[in-house]
Amino acid sequence: MGRRHNAAFLALALFLGAFVAGAAAADSPRWWKGNLHTHSFWSDGDDFPERIVEWYQTNGYQFLALSDHNVVLEGEKWLPLTSPDRRAAFTNYLARFGEPWVMTRSLQATQQVRLKTLAEFRPRFEQDDHFLLIPSEEISDKHRVLPLHLNATNLRENLKPQGGTSVVDVLQRNIDAIDAQRRLFNIPMMAHVNHPNFGWGITAEELMQVRGEKFFEVYNGHPQIHNEGDVHHAGVERVWDIMLAFRLSRLGLGPLYGLAVDDSHHYHHVVRTNSNPGRGWVVVRAPRLRVEDLLSALEAGDFYASSGVRLKDLKRSPTELSLEIDPEPGVTYTTQFIGTLRDFDPASQPGPRPSNSIYAVTRRYTGAIGAVLGETKDIRASYRLQGDELYVRAKVVSSKPKPNAGTAGEMEAAWVQPVVPTGARKQ
Image 1 (tube, rainbow, N blue to C red):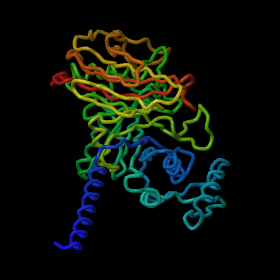
Image 2: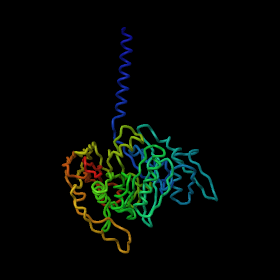
Image 3: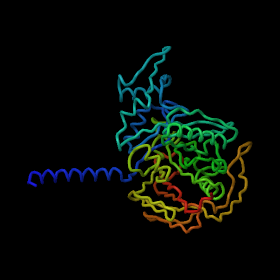
Image 4: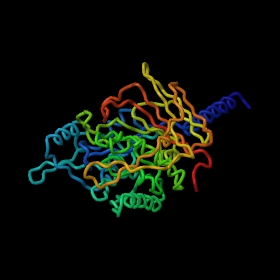
């Protein structure tokens, strides 16, 4: 083989080597940050979807689901500019995107602007392995006066609230409707139960019974969500542990994974009493920024929820849970490994109801449910399961106060999904 042929062969070999290396790197799992609960002018948010998407894209997010109430972002919708806040938002929107993108009309002397559909604006923002928009809807249902909301992520058609005869029935009917659409279109689709303590709508005993559900919001940035509970109502983390204990020991159901979300509505005035963006998110480990990869990783529990704490690494198996924190200078961290043992006492007492309330509250259980099984202040933390646990999850709390928190005195935190030792789930 001549020198020229040798050079050509070497160049081809280098190209193929670089191509294979690049493909392997593309398929290596990476961390992707995203928000799964967001509102716009399509329902009760106070800004245009393009402005909202741009905020998330420029603030370090790789994926976003716009989940307006009982609507998908399609069809023709005109927004009347009937308030000073809407007119101010429109002025900013027009200055940023201009005509002919921004379309207006006058109807009965009222100026209106047409809201762009997801199909129209997603090409302006999506970039392969950089930013992804996911179709979504917040199905906003109720039982009597109790608000019962669920998000359907990556749905294809609008789903109407299904109603029902009880809290459990309403939740189950909506979960089943999402699952039916998933099977109809044969695509990945995800349901999650929103903010259980909003309007004190859902107790642990009710949510634990829902079949075919894997996700709920353990942290929601809206200031009216009551993540921490009150004197009558259990906090959402307490609800999580109660549900895990009974689903895994007595109900024959799998674990529920905890999401952190913004539930953002307000984008112009950043104050604690508003529901602003950037308060809660999930960080998902997946090989590519594609819906099927993200939802597959979420289904496997290969993600963590955060209100500010970052992790460098996370390992979950039926025998060990370990993590490494990505620390900020001057900030300290406490990691707790939280779980319930198989021989826990299931006895409970009715929780005291607020005056004049006829609605149930989560019952009171022993502290053996959701006990702290280990604790460390090291940046690297691990827990090896002993075999008598039903599950173990982890929570990291930092010494850094959360900026613009929805709750006074809130510190930044992260939540790692529960691991279940082999044989712990009752069949």
